[in-house]
Image (cartoon, rainbow, N blue to C red; front, side, top):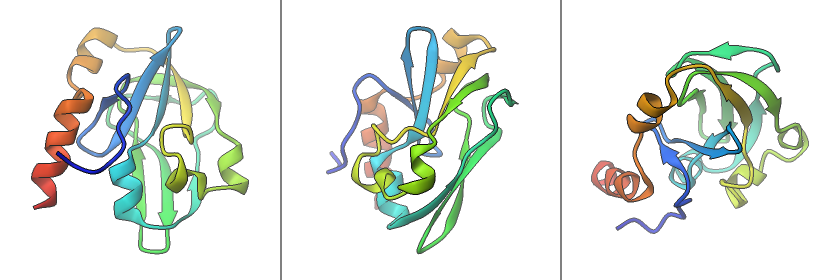
Length: 133
């Protein structure tokens, strides 16, 4: 069992994004494990509102003192909102990875199939444990 915080209401991709459904809208960010691997986040490049993504498309970029990593759309959808607060305070990703969401999507794909392809918090915890060794 990893020591990382998890959101039990989220689904997780192997590329370390999380998605949580709230009122038919998908909220997307990166996991606690991902922010830990990146170290100090210094910049987040967010998509434009209205942009459509298929599951697995590059949707954003997160830059840290160590590296720049792509943030992939965990499900298909159209961006309906971005978290503008991250422009001024990208370090929020490090301190509160589940509150510091990147963007919100209106799902456009088969939600049952796409969410079903992602891991629940227990599955993701095991995945992080496995890949850390």
